[in-house]
Amino acid sequence: MSTSILNYATFKYVVIRDKRLGIAYYAMNLAVVLYACSEIIVNKGYLEYDEFPIGSLRLLPKDEKSNVSDVAREPYCCQARTPDAQGNGINKLLRCEQCQRLDAKVLSWPVESQTLTIATFIKDKWQSLHSPEHHGSNADLEEDGFVTEKKESYFPLDPESIMLKVEHSFVASRFTNLGTGREELASSNRKMDGFLYGINGTRLRMISTEGQSDKISLSELLHAAGLETGLDTVSDAANANGNSYRNRGCVLRVSIVYENDRGVPFGTGHPQ
Image (cartoon, rainbow, N blue to C red):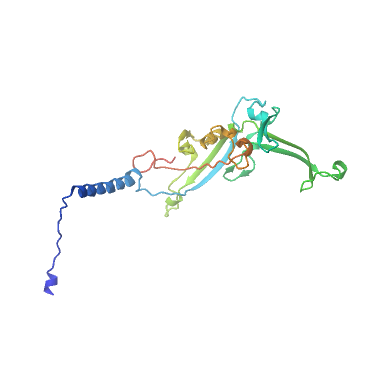
């Protein structure tokens, strides 16, 4: 019993006299230190992030001020793509009456939440209620009992120039003060500057609001999506048959990312 009480521990000090093991040992220690510094200082690992803030969005199309007349002079106004006998698409020149200048609010229908639809190719159909006295018993009836009197297809003139006014805001609910219930971090586009990025991550331009809504044209969004020739780029849809996006349409998905940790060496700055 007295022997166990009087015991003590000691450590053995060993020196490894091997240059290769020494280099590997110090290199590993240096890598651990550099990784820790990178995560803490460069990537600001000491900050807490809200990856899914609560946001609101409002989109409003607006016609760009222009002196362009209503006379259709664009190349796409004078041609349509029609299938030949083999089913292949061929260009057929038509009269330059295939374009019509329409208001931006007419083109943006239907109205949906956080979604904006802009028509680039329109098909109009005039119908009347079927009447045997006027249409005869052999008239081509629709399912709703109407008879088609006239059909017309055309391109809206220059929809790329439509300006999109974007109003948006966010609340980082993760940082809500539990004592007061007040959101500690919230802002709107009227108080923030931002940037438009392309699909490959390239910064295209700065968006400075100065207390107003963000304004981005449809042509800028098409360019950011990688469509260098805009709506006249040949569609990659399976049933496009060589037609352009102007004829077949496309879907653009735009993401808004809020940051307040860029542009400052330590801590956080103003949201962007």
